[in-house]
Image (cartoon, rainbow, N blue to C red; front, side, top):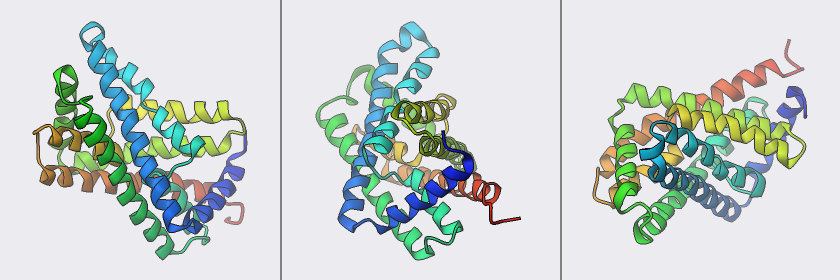
Amino acid sequence: MHTPYEIREITIQTARAKVAKRLKEKIILAFIGGAMISLGYLAYVRVISSIVEEWGSFASFIGACVFPVGLIVILLGGGELITGNMMVVSFGFFAKRVTGGELLSNWLIVTVANLVGALFVAYFFGHIVGLTSSGVYLEEVVKIAGAKIEANFIQSFVSGIGCNWFVCLAVWLCYGAKEAAGKIMGIWFPVMLFVAIGFQHSVANMFIIPAAIFEGSYSWGEFIQNIIPVYLGNIVGGAVFVSFFYNQAFNKNKK
């Protein structure tokens, strides 16, 4: 296991590598990132819908154990996810290795491609294949999406902070581990916790709310009203609560 000081250096190097990628590479990997998070959420919906009658509220914990697979695939197999980049690229910015323009460009490209990947899974796998369009699966999708939409701006914003605090800690621990098994464990538990708690993740919401919209529930206006505060909260959770704080704590050059 790397020390926190070593993880800081790894994160800064990763930030530099992320902004240096070709545009085509960023788009493809970010599409994959959005799709993988959405497939993790789709698995969550399918699992808890199937066992909720027998397991009750414990079903959501079982679903939370499934969801981290999406981030594991992204970090170990290759992918770009905006919530992780909110921490990683801003780490490079705070260390003066990434410019403000590079940071904003990366965030914009990855966000849009993540959205496309999430919509792809919601429409083709959820709606066309029918994995979210009928029975208990549809009921669960509508219920989850409705709970997210019903949260007011400040609730969604603060929930977004909590979510990305956990997600970016998972990324941090992944960078700290030297072996694949350690990386998987480092990712699994923080992500499982944010899902079990019920915090809001902007890319996950890019899947679950459109999945409900494609089945005739809610509107795109309600989707936008949810995504804005959650996205802003995710920025604070990743860029401030992890990146800024850890850069201050583990920077040997600062007194």
